[in-house]
Amino acid sequence: MSRLPSKETLKKDSKDSLAAARDIRFDPNIDTLVASLSLLVLWGIYYYQSVSESTESVVVFLLIGNFALTIAFPIYYVCYARGEPLSAVGITTDGWKPAILVSSVVAVLFFPGLLAIEESTAVLIPHIITVGLMFWEPFFVHGFLQIRFEQAFGVLPGIVLAGSGFALFHVGTAGVVGVLILLALGLFHAVLFSVFSRNILVLWPILWAVGSSQGTLDSVVFGWEEAMAYAVILLVTGVVIISTHRKRR
Image (cartoon, helix red, strand yellow):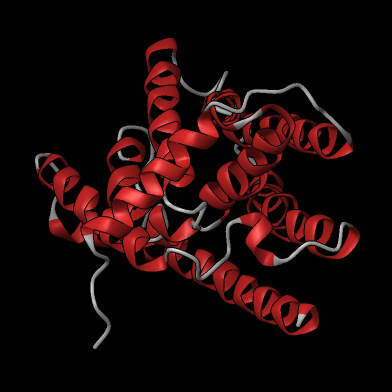
């Protein structure tokens, strides 16, 4: 049985992150441009899907917005075009124990708020599962955007830009208050991601399934059909990640 991370390990991760936070610079490059443009494209796709009721908009949103643009492209660009490892997009074993521990603890703290929502268990279960299967959002915002922004501007600006990016692609589909709430959540997630070894496991799937479910239930309710669709996307994502890992080795 693997041991839980010690207090010394958690303190070391926090101290390393605080030290890195003092490094603020201005060194944008092609990676910064690519990340920024991909965020704008995602905003367009997200807005198009939200205002259109056509089948085409749903297909575009799922295949491009939830996979091609937000998962396949970042992996191709970073790992193949730039020759960097998967850890450069937040897929790493570094710090996985404290990441999962913190993700679980925060999810437990958020869980009572989810139960307080007036929805039946039959509604909540498929919704939570569907949101938990959505790898694209935390991966794109933090694994791709945040790491690129941190490399260009430093840790603190990277956190602010990633949190702002999370709120940005909801502009036009959420009200002002909703966007501000998303900004706060994005910043919170960005801090966790940065502090805990930039490991996507600190956000996904545990915390994301619980925390994000509360926000999405206000605007949409996912059922088993959506869960199946995202399960297929996640399966293809797993194949892409495993293939990339083997080739990088």
